[in-house]
Image: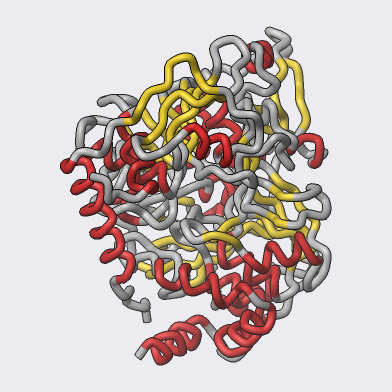
Length: 281
Length: 261
């Protein structure tokens, strides 16, 4: 079903929901995150391997009560200061952490997609994470007795992805770095995909990542929807934006002023991008 | 080459540890510089894997993030992230894992999670990411970390990734498949585990560094190996290649990106 971003968030993302905006560095659904902030959703359980700037913004704007994650930094730059402020000072309120390793979280998404109760891996040996996270336990292999790490399946109420294109029927194609997008998509109860373009028919490619239309609840045309992350073949990652975020996100006041002007002060992603372009000119 | 910085010397010393055709799981920052320097000098067929799923990548410039488009565009193949960790790393197909951290202890265990108690940290760090399983499964691990009493510590605030645990074979007894941290490259030289105690000891110094400097920068009583080597001064070729790579990288990252309106 083709929806506007406003309609898709309004209809599918409710207060208290578990929500995974996936995309590993590439194709991060920023436009969707900003729309969730504009619609002032609260008490969300946010799920993402790498929270990145999009969850730093959502956490700082008070959307989240819980975060499931495996690496919470600004890639190549340093800290996510809003995530840190929530973890260190409970600002704007307490944030419950469900912290994993990448391998553990990947196993949890795979189990979720397969509708198994838990994922298994050889992992977490010699780490303190299991002592602080009851979601990391162990099982014995029924065949060999080997002890393996176990993590409960992740099945988000809603997964939101950004992709390069969908066709008119709603089939979705993704190129480039895919991260755990396919697993997060198939693990979800509801799947929303924002796309750079909608084409009559997807080019035939036997092994392209395609999410068939009948697992997709909503397709949203949203040009530039992954910016300041990127969409391979459409636009590059704005590394300077990530570097500049270090100063913007560091203090509460500068963060709130930026969000007020650029996200709450714009009606949609097009206006958000236009505002940034104006500022850069 | 007395004018090279310690950062440059670290990258060059680490690059020399990598042999051609080895399969290397790369972290961002100094490890990424070292691995690509090796590829551009003595190890042209080194296989670089970044956890974003880019395998056999040959970036022209160093990526800022672990998933820059540059890595995908120059990769032999791009695979889903769960497959990187299960079919490649866990399956034992990675020769060398390259890690950084905020803290390391005398047995090469790493903290990248918190400073202070986990529930009420004074500093919340990004967390472990891929490191716990890289540390577990890679056949060898190399660690790159600048030394200070805050980073080379007697007691970690949090154990994020396993080195030799308590030493004296504890890692092997835990069932960890990989060989653990075989080298720690830092800004005075290199540490490596003692064969019995598995305690990190000083095995090599940069030509302009001293044992006293090393001991002053390490938070436990640092032992010196029976044989203490001097790490050869960077060659002109190594230094020129690294500086050209860094210059290309700075130029690429400063290039304004078109906002996709």
